[in-house]
Image (cartoon, helix red, strand yellow):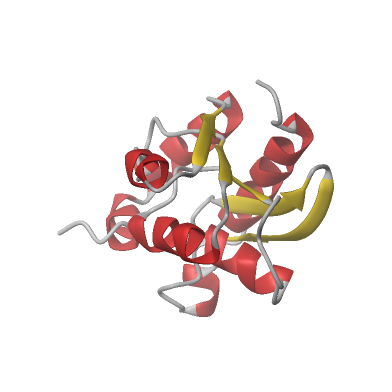
Length: 148
């Protein structure tokens, strides 16, 4: 897959694992310009009691203000929810690399319809970690995705 840095996918997994080990949802994200990491983060909804502290949001917060998101790529261990997808579009991030969308088929079509290039890697480590989390903590997972 051209323009996809598998080292950054591995970093997303490491961040997701960190969140999982802390008792949170295993979702990690990295914002990069090529191989240069601009920011990274992981889901911290449980750890901080913050309902919008999704992995992508934490990553963008840690990246700080950017004069432009042109040329940046957002890597994420799980397909983005609508909140995160909306933020991607709002900030003008034109490329998103998703490690896995088996456990949650987020909003790839929403992103593509708005001109965002979406690459899906199908990383088995991310898929397995999220599947394990969902099996272990289904109520927390349903809370995260606002399932009733």
